[in-house]
Length: 129
Image 1 (cartoon, rainbow, N blue to C red):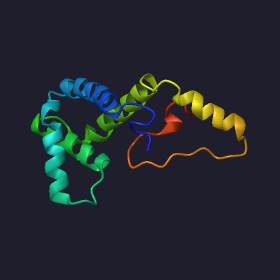
Image 2 (image 1 turned 120 degrees about the horizontal axis):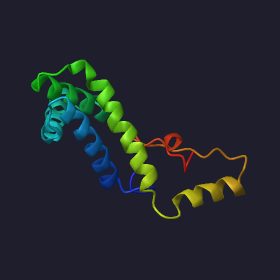
Image 3 (image 1 turned 90 degrees about the vertical axis):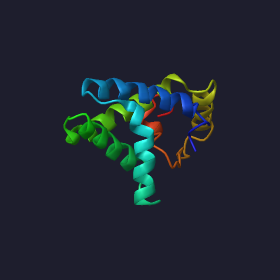
Image 4 (image 1 turned 90 degrees about the horizontal axis):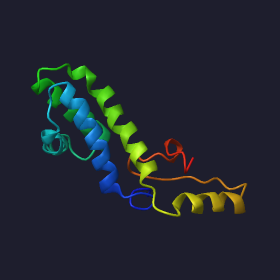
């Protein structure tokens, strides 16, 4: 898993949430209700609901409650995801990128890949790509 292996997850998500909060504020919505709304939606939907879907649907709910256009939710999710990747790059643990580069140097024919249950994407993290 990439989270807490290459970057500190809590800080990365907090940075992404700050970017989302600013975007929601422009729409008159408040991020304070995001986490409880996500939890409520996931409980109602069951384990098949992904965090991406829960976050996007929760953003839509917050937009609706603020009297804004819920169809903006996917774009605001992308704000969050872009900020998450930028924060992951900015907060990479010391030596992580160098370790990946060294594996690639020593084993040029090897495929370096990541398996994760989250949204961390090394292809969107320039130091790891």
